[in-house]
Length: 381
Image 1 (cartoon, one colour):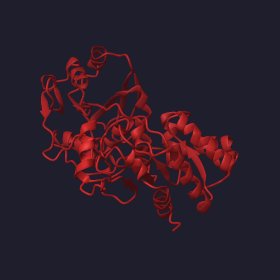
Image 2 (image 1 turned 120 degrees about the vertical axis):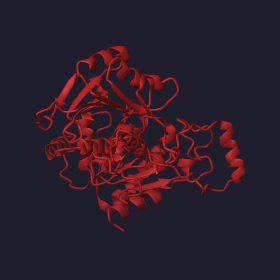
Image 3 (image 1 turned 180 degrees about the horizontal axis):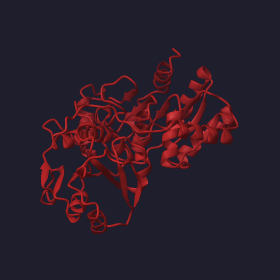
Image 4 (image 1 turned 120 degrees about the horizontal axis):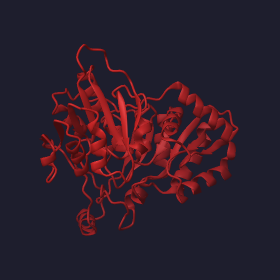
């Protein structure tokens, strides 16, 4: 299904047709945008088509790096997707996704040049398997035995020697560099129009009945699992304390799970319904982008909405526990536009969905530290 297209630059010859097979997770998709921007700058006359799961199609609406979006749905096999692509007559395909399936799709499509990360049992479907960078660091889940050993070795002390890793943005830039593209480090970018922001503002006013101009975002969920979630009670405590200083309203985004609902209802009972708008699970992806751009700041877990907020230009404050902010932190690596509170306990990052012990990574991040980070970023201290 083609959702939209922008005409490529006119030329007496057919423009070079490039297919980019996108990634399947929201946060990863946002982190791939610098690579796509570099590809566009290097090949301004090319017609670039992005193949993505239909759930992420809205993310790419009006993105300057993309001419056309093609989608696939859950349940569509690699053969069907590959056959769908054959009519595109692409010259070159770049697989940003690491899966075997993504390479097979490009092979079935018969695209003559197929570039992607080198992996066993995948390379035969690519014409140019790209070896990982020498300094690349992969996310590896730790076993319970390894976690116990790290804690014993540290003797209960906080960890201060977290491994130096390279942000995932560089993985995607490394792939476009294999095409001869200069891999300039750019900030992730998602396009949102003022018209979309205005439409969200009107919807917010209808929901809350409030004309408050100071709205902050709150994203207390994370789809990956509970190990990535700062405790809901701490989100509530932080939101109430921040409100005491800045008299803000709170817009709640993300997944509509019991913990998020508990946060919403508790804040409504304390602040009044006009200052709390629960949009969790109630927006399209485009509305999520617009809502996050509307906010002056977003307090969030490490999640897809965190990456989206940073990419639309909204500062974020993020408690990190089971994951690594060095690998998947918000925005441009090394920039000071966002605030990350990374746990330093011996077993973090473990990259597990659920904590097998006492959740010390997130429990060690105190409410006062998060409140202070938010207020400082808002310029109130």
